[in-house]
Length: 312
Image 1 (cartoon, rainbow, N blue to C red):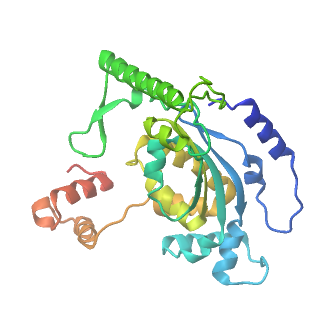
Image 2 (tube, rainbow, N blue to C red; image 1 turned 30 degrees about the vertical axis):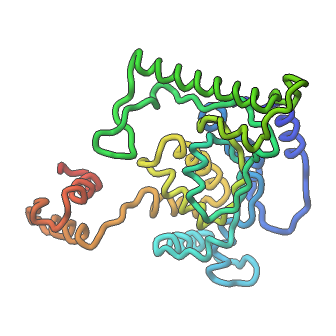
């Protein structure tokens, strides 16, 4: 990911700015503030602003005046209790705002999380950059035979090379046609003074879904955790999962006690149905349990056995 000269200048100015405040700040996140964390080939995630910290979650839970004098281990214990029992309101007291650069197809998947404030770069007013996501060879996989929305084996040799070639050719050709319809280059200069060019809001329809867009995305901590629980999961699509993983870095810098509890009780945990729990109890009692006598479907049985690290 390469930043333009204007972006580097903007970043330098943002990093030198200082503002006096009485609100809590987090040194580890302050160090990350404005810094772009590279994602994919041209994308990034960077924190623009935030409000609150671990203590703000604790304060909201206790509805206390000021920050209190309780020991840090008590605060950690309360945060872990809140996470374990899925109390959401105290986590809503903190907020964070990101600037994200991402392929359009990832953005369309991401926007399904309707619990954030979003303002996206507008191709009605501005000309899109000539930047496209090109997957690394190890990410070019066939359709999974067992998962309708997942990937199977990685493509090899000539087939992989052909796919990459098609992706690149189509993206470049679409952008060339986009510029031709606009009658403008990437800086807005007319290509042919004798033509008017098509309106930007219409010309954009020809762009491929791997074209990069940008947005500001602001969410409270509770909704951020919900997003990360789905998108940082191993089953999430790779192209959105790597953004979630970058955001996890900022979470750990911002609210380390919350991040620890989140990894323990959400990311690293599993949810068992009543029937699954009954099977676990029977197994602990040394009972021989088979799928046919478990009360579980074949898929549920396979999932439970995988969670328990046992042969199906």
